[in-house]
Image (cartoon, rainbow, N blue to C red; front, side, top):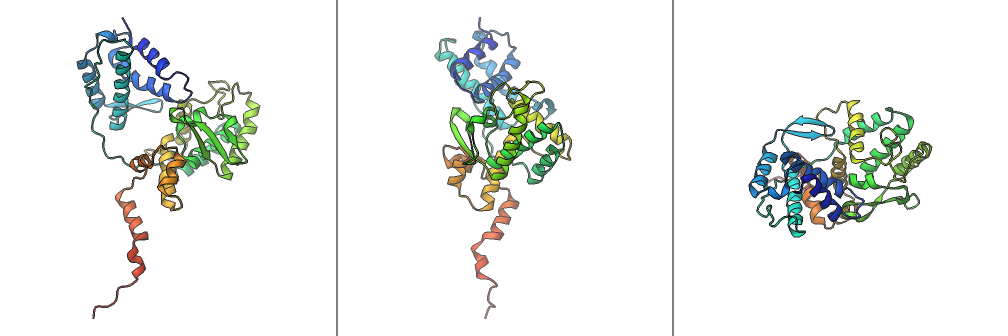
Length: 320
């Protein structure tokens, strides 16, 4: 008998061996959807394709989801369902290839059709309100840390996993860069504005007084007692700040800062898609175009009215 819990542990140990990024945690989080559906103690060798198809339908039809630390009403997004099912397919392919199962029961598991992505950027006004809340909430070291985090998220477009794993060693104030371990264990150099460097230096002064137990750039002393902040800690920090402001219904999760960075950079007109792709750590500009260069009808109308070549024609001549 092989339980889901044991199989997930072996999968992560094998597939994610040596990785220090968010991949292991991400795999576990997605596979836990299946574990909860099947029960952690079920015998995985007794599962059938029909069981996985029932799980697929449950993902598409469920009416609640996690929002930060809370369970809220609402369906899972198609992007979440696709991500979960892709991980499940990877998991059962691995089980078959390593001899855990005689056949790959997920070979015919279908992903729902991917919808057209929509803009997911945090609004500039939301960022300003979060910054104002960060400057007045919590102990003084928390204010310094939270301001530094908000400026890093806004200034760099870095992924949350990069900041979870960021260390002091990655900082180079002379070059104004932060080198991080990003998605897939790749190294990425994030560029920093002078104001972000100033806030990071201010935070480091307070950080030194907290007696941190490791060299993570962002640490907490409440639950982890000086250890690096987890992904959940970043989410919880944003939610605490949001509760102090009028942000009901606003988007402010860490990844929305990455979307805002991409969109705002393009809208300012000083960076082409190729350079933006490099700044964001994408392997190809195609990814940047598909998921981040997204505009609604109002934004397209504004862009057209400001840039149309017809503007250079001026007032049309009178018809003679």
